[in-house]
Amino acid sequence: MDYDYDLIVVGGGPAGMLGASTAAAKGLKVVLLEKNDKLGKKLFITGKGRCNVTNNGDADDFFQNIISNPKFLYSALRSFDNHHLTALLASLGVQTKVERGNRVFPASDKSSDVIKALQKHLQINSVHVKLHTEVKGILIDNHRAAGVFINNDKKISAPKVIIATGGMSYKQTGSTGDGYKMAQRLGHSVIDPKPALVPLATGEKWVKDLQGLTLKNVSAKAVINNKVRAEQFGEMIFTHFGVSGPIILSISSLIKHYIHTETNNPVLLTLDLKPALTNEQLNARLQRDFNKYSGKHLKNALDDLLPQRMIDIVLQLSGIDMHKQVNRINKKEREQLAHTLKNVTLTVTGTRPLDEAIVTSGGINIKEVNPSTLESKIINGLYFAGEVIDVDALTGGYNLQIAFSTGYLSGLSAAKA
Image (cartoon, rainbow, N blue to C red; front, side, top):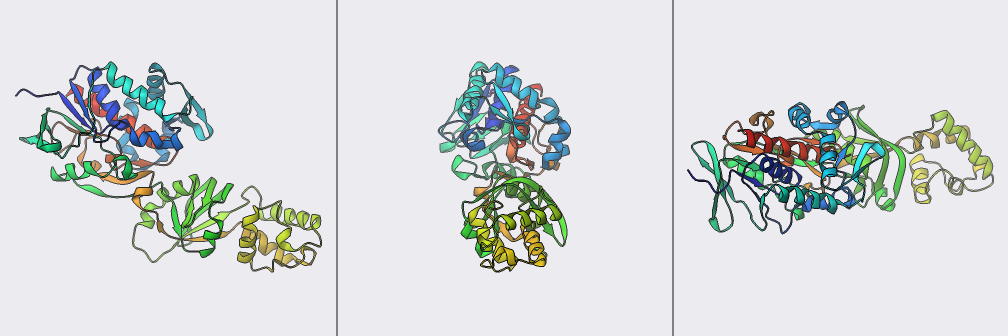
């Protein structure tokens, strides 16, 4: 049978672009199909437009930060790791830099430079790119891939297909779960997609009064049934619905199975506003501040310790009269205030919608995909790459590296098959 191409790649994100260029570099005639008007639309907004492409940690660090199915990714990450990625980007003219938490960014701080580099990689390897081309389904012939259906019921034929359509987060970028439907029609099962790395909704009304307030260097613990299930240190922000920010997003992924499971045990979020201080040190600090502001009302004596907007809330939670003069605060009240500062508790009522999540948890069941090649165990010649698979990680560049690594392995496997 004469085919139009050797390989069709569905989806022009990081996984699709690297999968297509890798296979083409090995001699395959490849077409990349993207339904949007440009490639890398979601990649463009990652890292607030700066594009946290990977993490500079070692292999152990990567696997500790992968939440769903880390063992499945051994082959992919071994085939194409963070050092391979930064070397490839450098060869395409993009230098990178390492920041706090080993996060790796383009030196220019521009995600557009990463996208241009990946497009250059496609061009160098003669990948045929078709934009505004929505794939409606996969063509199958005798249990093996044979091509795809596209707009207007046209067909493009190829003996190999990579599905790299992403998940269901940020739908405005085109991630609308297309790959899940295609795979399900072919007999694949899909683990129910849920939001990961997502802001948390909370029940306390006072949170709205703090909307927009950012707290740095705080500790947050997720407590379920009196057991700490996750703990993070860093930055967070209050919103009109609850809490967000880096440490909250990470906690949301670490406790996602508890949030999305029907249970009578509430998820409590405990904030330590002064994690660098022990209870005794904080008590001593309060004594110093009270001596400094002797004669003032309690609410006017905490400016050195808390943001102005946080003071009234903390005092309300402590149950101490905010109009009481600090020189009249007794030891028990001071200890109660110190306890409150280290134990501000919020009740998690759920997550924000999937469309507001950074990544999707869930996707193509890994039991039906060969981890060494990323080929389907159900349909020969069909491969999966990126967020469409049931894998996800914490923030810090890990999810993008997963996309690049699985894209590379799928392209390499298609070329070798």
